[in-house]
Image (cartoon, rainbow, N blue to C red; front, side, top):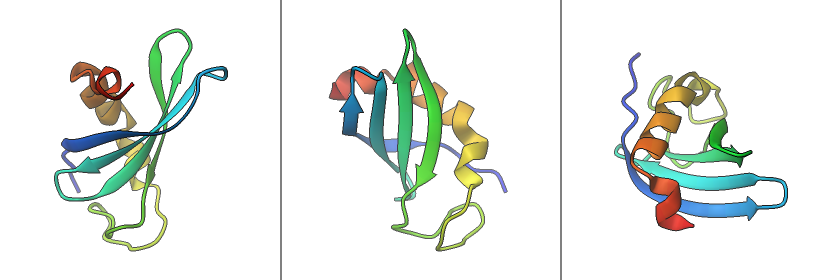
Length: 90
């Protein structure tokens, strides 16, 4: 199933500047929430995507843990970096 990455809300959740790790919580256009884990050494790079269990997965429709969002790491990274969402919350 095709999934359209469209972020409507972006918030900083946790950060460790010494280690270069930053966690952000995003809400998508379909109200799915995900945690994005970025590293900054020296450029921003998305290293992990976890779906928060607020609504069923829009891809497989499971309401428990799945790994569907990891298939869309490149799309998440492109959406965040192209729209400069990180600089808007830090």
